[in-house]
Length: 208
Image 1 (cartoon, one colour):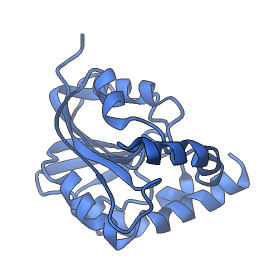
Image 2 (spheres, helix red, strand yellow):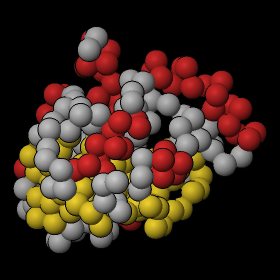
Image 3 (cartoon, helix red, strand yellow):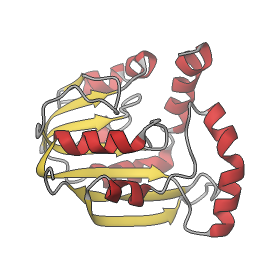
Image 4 (cartoon, helix red, strand yellow):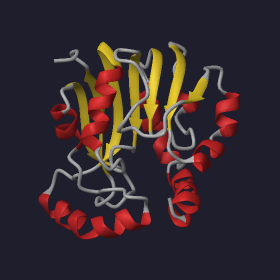
């Protein structure tokens, strides 16, 4: 990783993802997590305060050493064990059917091969396990999509490969998940170009 991606982007993401407006969304997406959880794109640990008591352990997949260091205080304050294990969401170092639930928050926009990452999440989830997600992506309105396509190259350069135009629900379904809850909306107070959010849950029906 270059200096900007390695030393600057994690700090930008830490600040951007720590805004107050994200707290209700984190609370919503973490509700219902149970047992052993794999969180891809752990970042600097902003979800840690919202893990419910039913969670027994969280395995954090995070490629950035700096991001993990920035999470230090949140991890130390957690009553739920959190360990970093795995750097690449596209190739998870875990056995099949290991985890009860999975969590992804504002992560699927950045992973280079998002299809591979979702297949990996499905592989390591137990049959009947649930993926909880909140992501920004392709807007529901074509007028906004046109602006997203214009800004997408700049977004990728500034924010470590982040895409504005990924169709989140379609990607999750294509990976073999069954979406059971979904809410698509524009975040209040944010430009629609970057504030088209998809929040929901998807079940793993088991390996084909």
